[in-house]
Length: 361
Ligand code: SF4
Image (cartoon, rainbow, N blue to C red):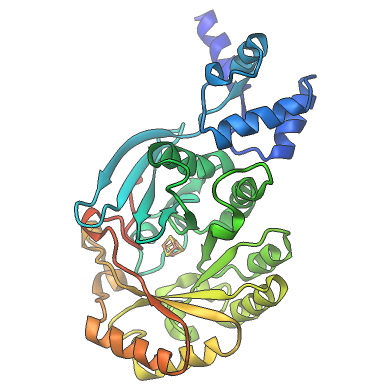
């Protein structure tokens, strides 16, 4: 019993190194009386060589490795299971957190790139009507280590050179977990990091206006996608309750600020919902909004939520028919707006946009 208690006490004291930036790692080694360059070594092993076992770190002396095993932790997530779409090759991972919660990440192979979609929260508190994650509720923020480990675990299987792009579009609202999300982004942005650079990273937000401004003022330059879905305040509030807190008007001002300060164009995400946002006046309003800032539009066909049997508005939403989507897109293109129509990759394994919802309880 006594031994058990000691072990528990010792485990509690372990410092999680996964998710630390280069500076934090160096500071950690200073704090335990070791040279700062050890931080650089561990950084390289963890993030560049995808190693999470001290015994594989050949340039770290054995005595130090043993010491580190006692006082630190290198694993943030455990692999739980995965599923691959036989149609598109899209792969959905389920990872397990130390407190036994499950999160999902999706690898999306395309012609010239492979994108990894990662989660920032367990569930999501924002309750967007068209999204399974929102309907399933919210548990907690992920740590920076848990966010970054999704990339490391997927890269270990696919190879670092295969995963070319990262999108923070999985479960959760990244800007509601701002500090941990940004810590994970900073690791991509570190000079020492090999593989993906910050230019290949996109954060998607439902619209947390003050945090969009904060992001603009950070020294990190990443792509920003805004989940727009309607240019009308009342409709947007109905399908995205967060609009009642941070209005579209506030968000538009913040997005203009982001575009101006970073020199990057904004991506407007637009999921096509029958009779809700696919009318002529919606196209006209979207054209008007695009003229206000450097931007492009990602049109997303609505993916079924039947797998979670939703009630209320979420249960009533239907997809816009393909022909109508094409007409909508033509209207935008006639006005020289850059428009992409996103493939519904992974719908067969419920890994497509808005479908991620591992049962939280
Ligand atoms: S769309 Fe994004 S912000 Fe909205 S509920 Fe889903 S995960 Fe949350």
